Amino acid sequence: MGEHKCIGILTSGGDCAGLNAVIRAVVYRAVGKYNWKVLGIRQATNGLMSRPPQGIPLDIEKVDSWLTIGGTMLGTTNEGNPFAYPMSDGTLRDRSEEIIEGYHQLGLDALIGIGGDGSLTILRKIAQQGNLNLVGIPKTIDNDVGITERAIGFDTAVNIATEALDRLHFTAASHSRVMILEVMGRDAGHIAISAGIAGGADVILIPEIPYKMTNICAKIKEGQDRGKNYCLIVVAEAVRTEAGEQVIQTNRLGQRRLGGIGQYLADTISDCRGIETRVAVLGHIQRGGTPSPLERVIASAFGVAAVDLIAEGKFDRMVSWQQREVRNVPLEDAISKYRAVEPDDTLVKTARGLGICLGD
Ligand code: F6P
Image (tube, rainbow, N blue to C red; front, side):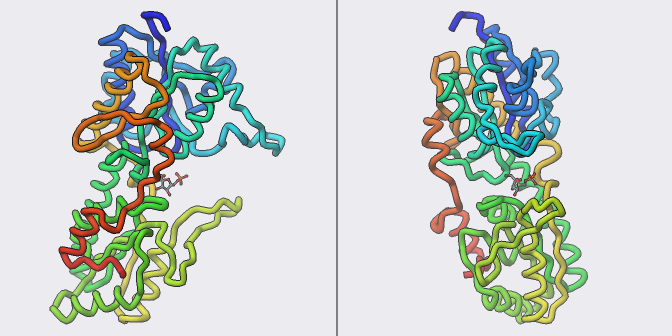
């Protein structure tokens, strides 16, 4: 690699708050410190598949105002695995070689990929195949990427879910109701447990801890016996029915998405306690909006560190947040060590210590 490098950056998978703050930090560091050229790749790996490949030159002036903007200015997708890409004729095609070719056509010396475990796994496979210089930055509101305490998007999502609980609190108390907040998180309960503690929930249900309806109903009764006329429940979307079935919504195209566990709980609670119960499903509201201050700090730290890794010639690595420090870890380890909420997690202990019912 020569002195004057050209690096690419792309965002892949679901959007979230803080992505533009990462891109801004990458450009500040790459241009400001090393005088490199930065190309923003459009629509994740789709931009490298396109002909000509879609790389937008990014300079400090262009990204200056991006710190607080939600979503991703580069666009993204969580559809279309490049190894089995759905073509318009209905067939699936392996388009990984086109991506590798696109990287070379843009004259990239290295690529920064911002993604969750799924996207980072795909990007790594492509990089290995084409011998490309890849550095990963963890991103997902689910916070389930291995070996990092924080992924971009998580803190903002927790703030939004907490604010939702703060609001539901008043309606729950005013109407003497059970209010259920269904939050995202796919297979992990990180958002639910953090927001549940921060928002003063009475019950927090996460996929990692199986629950019994009798325990939830007993918790509501215990509150009523103490004179508390309402109950706040947070449930992660991937929590199953008591019988262990996934709750899925299927749209008319046959696509399946998690969702509906809140309503299942509401119906069952109404049966067991006869108390009025309502459900709010937060959905994509958790992904949008202005990044929280902590999000901006971590995004900035990750962006700077990722560029410095490239400068040091360290590839196939991911930046990681550990004990308020940015470290870097082998990408392979990060994607192979899925991070669920562990039974002895400090937040699980905290919730139990506060008397919050975790359903078990
Ligand atoms: O992985 C992030 C996430 O927001 C999950 O929490 C959620 O299940 C999923 O993405 C939703 O994906 P989509 O944007 O495709 O509906």
